[in-house]
Amino acid sequence: MKKSILILATASMVLFTGAAHAFFFSTAVKLGTSRAADPGRWGFNMGVQMEVSPIPYLLIGMDQQAYWSNWSETFSTSASDATHDMWNSPLLFTIKINFGNPLENVFVPYITGGIGYSWMSDELQYPDYYTAGSTYIPSRTIRRYYEGMAWQAIAGFMYNWASGSDTGFGLGLEGGYRGCKMESGIYNKDMSGWIVNFVMQFSLDVR
Image (cartoon, rainbow, N blue to C red):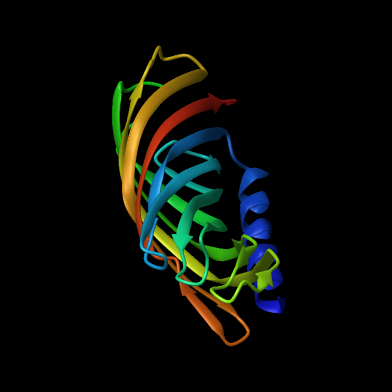
């Protein structure tokens, strides 16, 4: 926990120090899918990214992502399926390079790198059932909370409705890889995997 507080505090200070002298702001909403190595499944991915900079070509920001997956597992001891529910929420400090100005150029490719910390809830719900000897086993829930370092590398492009004004709107697509190793006591989860997102971005230049 001390590591996570230190990382987030440092990233916040860097972000807001830059914002005090920044003139270009960007906010993006992301919806898509990502894959986690453990459990080896694709799930729903969403995120919100906020960035600031004196120039529109190199931006610093914060990216809050969330991975969710829900599925059923069959156990030989039960006549019903157990339900598995998993949430992973990485918070990343990011640096983004735009190969163009979103307020002036229609097509703008970009790359983004990020590092931060992640928290995860992993819940497995077992239904009640009767054993072969007619013994009743009540339902139960096993829930564990994980945390660990996270990083990601992303490449994408935006199609902007660029008018040369102080505000802009764009739609785009991005993909990349997220590294995320989680721990909960003696238990470990590897939530690393590929990411694909549709992006809706709003830009503002207040100079």
